[in-house]
Image (cartoon, rainbow, N blue to C red):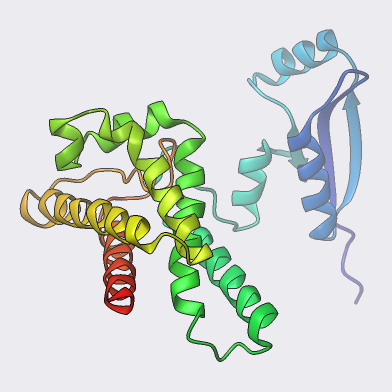
Length: 248
C-alpha cells in the first residue's frame, strides 16, 4: 500500500534585500527528509511582523507539519532527531579540527618532499603546523585570548603582557620549525611557552580543580581546559627538546 505523501508548510523571509539563510536551510532539510513543501514567502518587513503577531512567535522561519507548528530551524532539526548544541556548550570540535587539518598538511608535505607517507617528518611537521594554526586562531582576537589566558597561565598572571606576546611567539616558533631554520631560537621559545603552559594547565585543572575554558583556540572558544590543552603544551616541549638534541 503506497505511503501518504509527506507535506509541510514553511514560512520564511524572502525579500529583495534579504533572504533568510535559516529559511533556506529549513527548506533544504525538509526536502532531504522527503517532504513536499508549501514554501510561503514573507516578502516584506510588515508581512513578517504580521505573521509573527498572528502566530505569537518571535522569529522566522516557521515550519508546520500536519497542522502542528514545529518551530524554527533548530526546532525542525530537533523534530528530525538531530543534535542542536546549547548556547555556550563546551566542545572539543574546534581543537580536533585544528589537529586533523594539521595532520593532513603534514602528510601532504611528506608526500611532496619524499613521495611517501611513511616519513618520520610527519610528526614534527604536524606539531609545527598545529602550532601555526592555533596561533592563527588566537591572533583573530588577541584581546579576548589574553583575557581568557589570564585565568590560568602563571606567567601571564605575573606579567599580563605575556598574553599578547604568546600568539606571536607560538606562530614564530611554528614557522621556523617548519622551515628547519634558526633552531637555536625556535626550540627555546617553544620549550619556554610549552613548559609554562603545561605547568599552568596542570595546576589549574588537576591541582586546583578549576573548571575553565581553554584559550588554546582563541578567545571565543568553548573548549574546556584540560587534557587537550595539556597535550598541546607537551607536544611543543617534546618537539623543542628533540630539535635541541639533534642540533647538538
